[in-house]
Image (cartoon, rainbow, N blue to C red; front, side, top):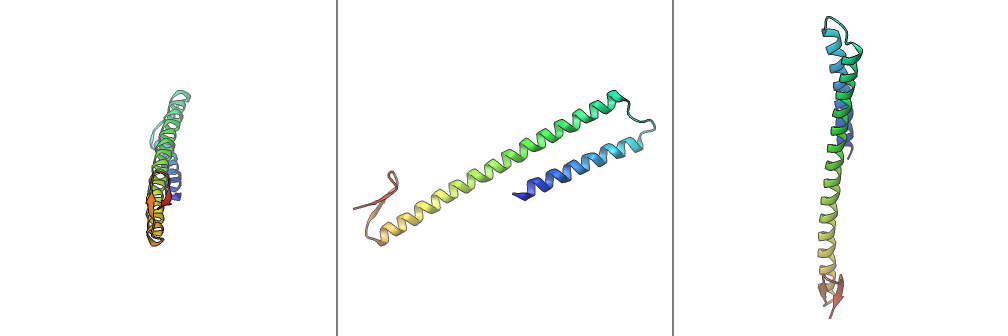
Length: 96
């Protein structure tokens, strides 16, 4: 889960560096309108990055939950079988 955060920090640092480098490379500094446009642009990039990271995190969480449900059902089924019973997945109980 720390990987997306590290990527985000790296992205922000890279974008900050690009903005700084573009200001250095340019013969004239950005005027206030250009600077505001650049700031808006990077804010949109950050918002998109955060949204993508949240979606990635949610997907991982959902996948983990699904795997956990399957493993839990398999373990309970195994325990029911060892006790000579049948696992009823609809009620999550051992029957018979």
